Image (cartoon, rainbow, N blue to C red; front, side):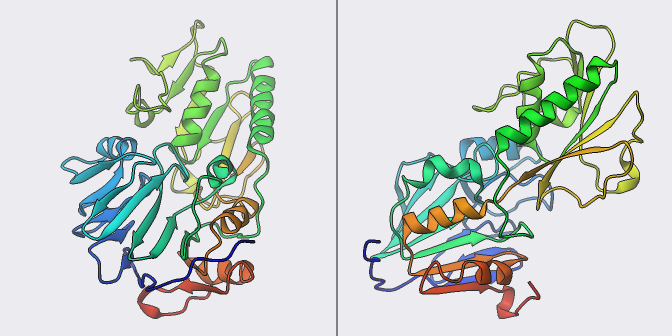
Length: 326
């Protein structure tokens, strides 16, 4: 392993209930309420209206615009370094959904990499990351030891299951936890001769960015007269999940750390996709070779214990310096 870069004056980080602050600078990380300038790593699909002025990719800003108006935003491109005051910034395409980004911050010899979420699908970009003094990773998946089941393998299992249901004249109801899986799902169903009804929420993203759905103006597609597949967002309560039946079996696409924790009942089939990958995270630490690693989020303490040998200093960032149970 090559020698770690020496830290002349490391960034000091302050964890709050609304994101992280890089002390003595105007920059915040994933802070959404009333901040002068905040880097937004991805488009959140739940929570309060964002009132901070944000730095984000064009795709993230575009997605956010479908949920709220009057966003104060500065658009940034991947791998195009730029400066704000004395800070040098650069975005890398790493994160949970299309348009997501990791942020590299440099100032006077100090360097920090912020990654809100890292999964198996981010492997291809790890080699592009430079060595840094500090890395901050979001701790949102309850199990930091999870090594993601190969996405393609689980995806093929899911598609075979849906085709099997259709073969016996069933009409599956598919519950999806977030936009990215929905996009991939609807793109896959485009190749089948079936009528698909998707929730109006998903139609808003028609034609936007590199992950466009291609929905068209109608909710129901396909050459057949009846709707054979319904695609709906995960409800917030168990009572709102449609009752599974042989004619309309419920299929859940579960993303750990994102989907509500509903225990499946008779007739429901579950396919698991993790938003975090232990192996990929370790590869990232090896590539960036940091002197300090920090974890921020509800499971920060748990992550710090699991990755304690990955750097000389590995620690959780607690909100208001108050330790948590995890």
